[in-house]
Image (cartoon, rainbow, N blue to C red; front, side):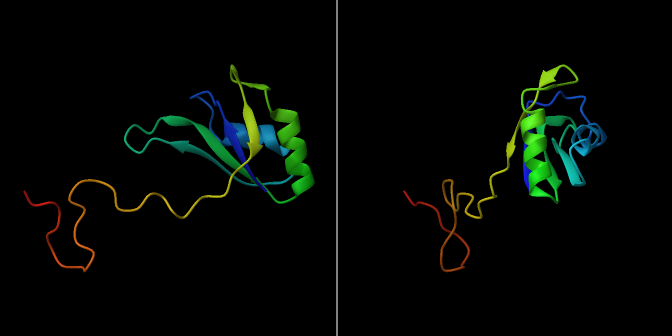
Length: 105
């Protein structure tokens, strides 16, 4: 089961999350998301556990619990959506593959 962990202190590391979750069972992966430009934590992450019962125990046991000064928000992660918007913006190009596009005035 993939678990979302929010409201993380910016000091929380992957290892900190792993330590908190392994009390409830086997942890497969842990990832605190970081800003690409600054390398600073975005304040949330994901933990994957192989056993769903253990994962649910971790969610119940860690939601609203303090980790490094912040009350965690822990719940089942929503699946990623493949449709992330599409062709936004002005002058998005031509649909037939040729160069150019946009509006002409």
